[in-house]
Figure 1 (cartoon, rainbow, N blue to C red):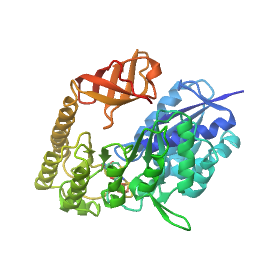
Figure 2 (cartoon, protein in one colour):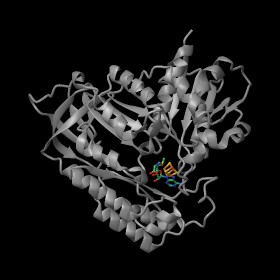
Figure 3 (cartoon, rainbow, N blue to C red):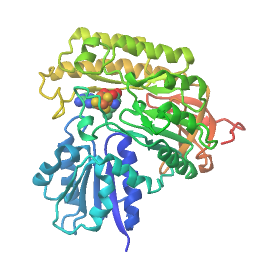
Figure 4 (tube, rainbow, N blue to C red):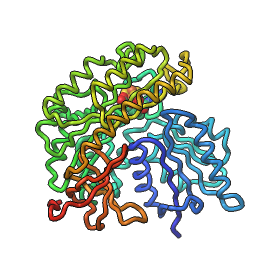
Length: 444
Ligand code: SAM
Ligand code: SF4
């Protein structure tokens, strides 16, 4: 009999990729995905630990699951992801409803754990077995059939920014073998992928050496571009220190690399960058920006910002605001510093909550304004959109332009997977709305 698994994913694109790969694995045991969280034999929470009350969110979620299954057979409850890695045994002690704790580098064990699972056993798997994990998943086809598909090429981080929990939850930096990544890309393309987004916590630090040479992300991007059915290539998340010239050069030579770069700076103050252990200066960041803009002035940037990191004065914050005014980031993420247990910044004196909130509002006012300005610049223009899917329950389609903006328009499902021209009629901060231009559908 088929068993059902419900997977709920929190956090970043890497977690989304992992959840899909976990599903590729458990399908071999006869599991199928349940869309109904109240009807599953196995309930998996893929968690994120990057900010806020991550741990408490997981306990709340489990509370909801308990209520849903009250008076019925409980599902096998798995907590996976970065909270599982960080909290491990403590979670099993505190919440007896959890059956399995599964850290991000132990996902290859999931089928054995489920096969051998006998009620009342409590299991914790949080080893950093990254190589074994990827070896296991290399043997299981990636069945994802999204038009825009994620592909993890690198995991973990050795940079230890003072605020960040990733080196502790995902472990040391690891780059997958070049040929294994290409094999996975080929299967994604044969499943219908027209865009591949290369993923890594430090994606541009990708470095794989065989007997003959070192492969960098630039080699991957250039090789991927040779697949004729693949139309677009992106990568995220990059660190400014790893924006090497070979990668920057791709923006002039590779037409499939989209002209949009997410490059987190975190702060516009060198003092703060030093305290955060970011290992670059604002001037070095601007140099990268200028080099890329010189190649093609239509390449746009987005970034991440942390406000109210311990020690941030009004003057430091104003430097960040000045940077935001200088570089018109088109779509950025901004956060109030959130102390993460185990990191260097965990026990530093924190900035008052009201000041932190004020700073967040202020920076967001500028960021949102430049996002809206960018979106407004598309009004009455015809833009190239890769159509990704149908919007549930509506006769509308969803796609993205080259800058990752969401574009929504009326259309038939046969456009999915194709590049078409859309004339933009209206915009808001997050999306563009338009109409299909008549007779200009390009060959996909
Ligand atoms: N590796 C990327 C880099 O170095 O730029 C960032 C990856 S991190 C998963 C995504 C973003 O979360 C960071 O760029 C940072 O802005 C934010 N972040 C990470 N830790 C944080 C913390 N403790 N408090 C607030 N924001 C945080
Ligand atoms: Fe975290 Fe990115 Fe810094 Fe690594 S480089 S510690 S992932 S913020």
